[in-house]
Image (cartoon, rainbow, N blue to C red; front, top):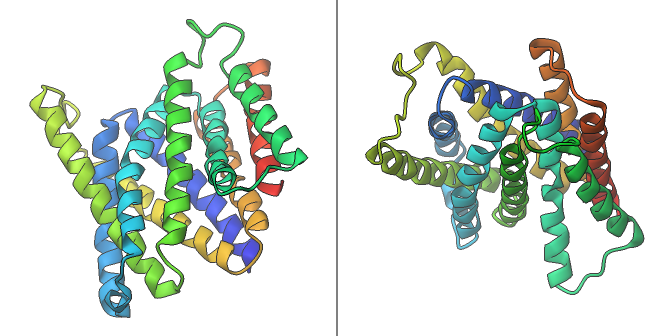
Amino acid sequence: MTALFALATSLLWGLADFGGGLLTRRTPALTVVVVSQAIAAVVLGVIVVFTGAWSEAGDQLWFAAAAGVVGPIALICFYKALALGPMGVVSPLGTVGVAVPVGVGLFLGERPGLMQVAGIAVAVLGVVLAGGPQLRGAPVQRQAILLTLIAAFGFGTVFALIAEASTTTTGLFLALFVQRVVNVGAGGLALYASSRRGVAPLPEGGFPWRSLPALGFVGLADVAANGTYVVAAHHGPVTVAAVLASLYPVVTALAARGILRERLRAVQAAGAGLALVGTLLLATG
C-alpha cells in the first residue's frame, strides 16, 4: 500500500507541476495558484462536511495554517520557474526540498549518515551543473534556479508541517482544507496588493475561462498528492514513501519532453539527474 500511494503521489505531483507551469506561461502565477487552490478548497470543504472531520479540530491545525502560508509562496516561485523553463531541469531541482526534514532532524540532535552527507553534496553539485556552463544568457536562467530553490525549501517546510497536522484520515481532510483556505486567503491578499501596484492579475483577454478545467485539475492533483503522500508515510516506512514520491520530476520531464519537445544540454540534463540522485540519497540515508 505504501508503494502504491507513493507512486500515485509522484504521478499527481508531476502532472500538477507540468500543468501549473504551462498555465503560468499564459496567466500570472499568483492567479493560477489562487484559482486552483480555491477550487481544491471548495472540494475539500464538501468532503469535510460529509465526513464530519470538524470533530477532529484542535491545536494541531496551526501546523496546517502555517503550511497554508508557506505553500502559496513555494507554488508561485515554482510555477514561475517552470514557466521560465526548461521543465526538465527545474522540476528535478525542486526535489532538494527534502533537505528540510533532514535539517529539522539535525536541530533535534540527529546526525546524518554517510549516505545523507553524500546526498547533500550530490544535490548541490546538481544545482550548479543544472545552470549550464554559462548562467548568463543560458536557457536555464539564474532567476529560474533561485526561484526553484526557494520553492524547494518551501515545499520541504510544508511537508514537515502538514505531517504534524493530522494523524487520521478524516483529520487529514480537515488539515488539507485548512491549509487550502489559508492558501487562498494569503494568495488573495497578495493578488490584491499586486493589483494595487499596477500588476495585472489577468492576461489581456480577461479571465481564461477555457483554462478553468485545467486550473481545477492542478489544484485537485496537488491536494490529492499531499494526501496520498501522508497516507503512504503513515502505512509504511517513510524512507520508502519518500523515495517513490520523489520520482515526480520524471513525470514532469516526460510530459515536457513528449508535449513541449524540450531539448536539454548534456550538462543540464546531468545536473538535473544529479539533483534527483542526491534527493534519493537523502531520503534513503
